[in-house]
Length: 266
Image 1 (tube, rainbow, N blue to C red):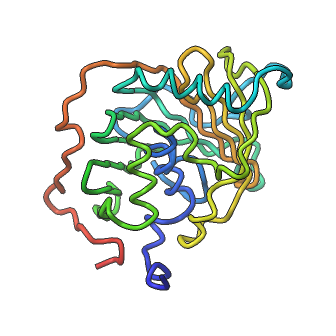
Image 2 (tube, rainbow, N blue to C red):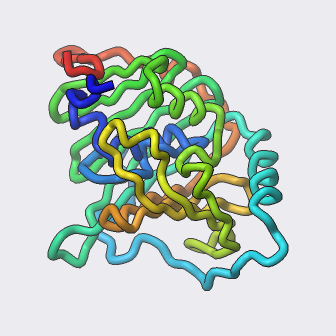
């Protein structure tokens, strides 16, 4: 297992694992565990500096609803979804500055077929494409792409579960708690809290406490927050559900001049 010590940081840093969580936690794993600098497709009209990424109502603590009941409700709602398209906004605090560092871009997922996430900041773009065989991380500025076989231990599991819309992939099941209901950015949500999966520590991803807001009306996440990682916040908005999505969206070929390497950096 020591081999992973040599994995290129550009792919396995916690923030990139967050992006897997986005292509993971039912759609949400690589983009929910945070720590460096990712980035786009077409620019999204979202401000690049924010003091506070979301607004919340008062949290109403759960009294009658249980984790089991709410979880079953979410899984039932997700079972009716085959494709998802939305806008992702990922931001975190900056040292000695009051504004936040913000990345934005589109996320597209087709159940058990593939996922495509593009993040941009100040014109710099990183792209993540997952299909049944590979996960690609493509840095446009460096003209470099890393390929990870889906059969890879641990990471392969997270990506596969992501494409099955596993809504609780981002949180270690032993730590998962249902807190109650709260409105975030005008959307009534169920609120969950827990810690990131221990199995990701092998990739240098520390265990961190996170909070997730899942919309009551459709079972899809609206916000993921990791306070210990510079208050990393991922906001998902502008959902389009069950729209036609071609399988070709997830077939990626390296553009001319782009170097492709494997997970070990070769």
